[in-house]
Amino acid sequence: MTIYTDGACSGNPGPGGWGAVLLYLDKRLEISGGEAATTNNRMELIAAIAALQHLKEACSVTLFSDSSYLVDPFNKGWLANWSRQGWRRSKTAMVKNPDLWQELLSLSAIHHITWCWVKGHAANRENNRCDELARAWIAAHKPYL
Image (cartoon, rainbow, N blue to C red; front, top):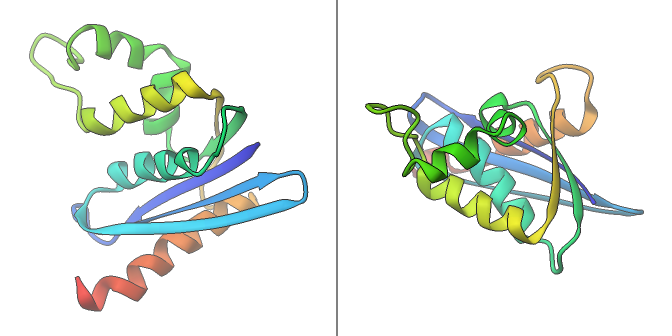
């Protein structure tokens, strides 16, 4: 399973959207959503959560994101440390979005996930599509938010 995700925000905080593309063999699923008042980082995390929650059974996943905020805590071991330290980055600094990080940890216990960073707004077709989905959600819902 290959997943691409992206999040976007119109203002930060402000209305936000996320998009994900799930690819398996010849199957493709595009999903998106958003929130009225959020941040770009929350949308990045929610995109990954929503995509992983769509999986019907445990599997091996390669997840691509242009968000080092999402990818680095897994690849650099920070997330495990934050969890052990009561969601603190240091003695005085709390981790932001601990509710979403906890959900991602739960999903990571179900699936074998390889977290990959890709350059945003570059030549990656699927990452660009996720950005389009996220921004389209904001545009479609902004008048009602």
